[in-house]
Image: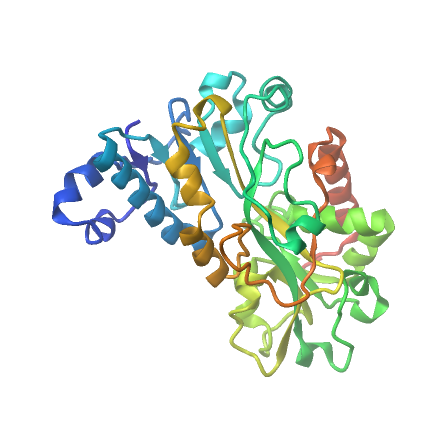
Length: 368
């Protein structure tokens, strides 16, 4: 695979941004990932993915870096940045990889706990095959919640904070929740909605916001999760929440969703965006690089951790950790993160599965 593979890319959208002299380089720098079985990530210098609202802008910035690198050095970097428009991608193969040479040299991801299988992590990640520095100093909210990796294997370049969007009309006089613990209260019975969706005839289990369930379990245990279940009116896609909150079609009074989406809710008179006092849930956007390839991939690393991307992230409510760019966090804002010792613990996957079962055993879906 040669150049930047962009799944579903509208090619002339990129070419219009390139001077005519760069067209040939742009063509050489792009190869599409086609639908079908997941392509192998073997041989990729770069495999990347970010949340949907950022994909086109981040992809374009990476394309510029690869084109400039080829123009200046004559060398091509092979990469893939799937756009989520159908078909399987190299991301679908990562969990099955056992050999270091089959893994991409650099990975950018927003996936939570679905990248390295246990054997690969033990032999290669924990064994020191991946190293990347976290530029510092990072802003206090990031440092205080422990986002910088003390082992230097992962660098977090931004977070997607999960916040509360309250629908005052739907709450009908109930107080607007200010802390995560408020969501356990009897006052919010049948008032909560958080991320989840299902295919027709399917279940929510595979497509629920596991990070939210993990956070609630870490904070409040099984009993707290059962309270959350009792208060949950429905699960719905996060992108739908800002459209319905504050309208007559609103199914809940309290929505848990990314700050980037809560901030674009158009029904401002009927809703309130709440940054929880005990900290918005910091979902990380992260990257890692094979230690042996770090110097060769420096242009990509510097771009992902640099101020140009940092400003884009901040403008779209994905606070960057780049020390050269203001984070864009609200004054006094706190973040909550479970900690690297939790993320890396072998027992966490079992804990999350058990927490998910606890929630669904206690929850009655709206159609039940």
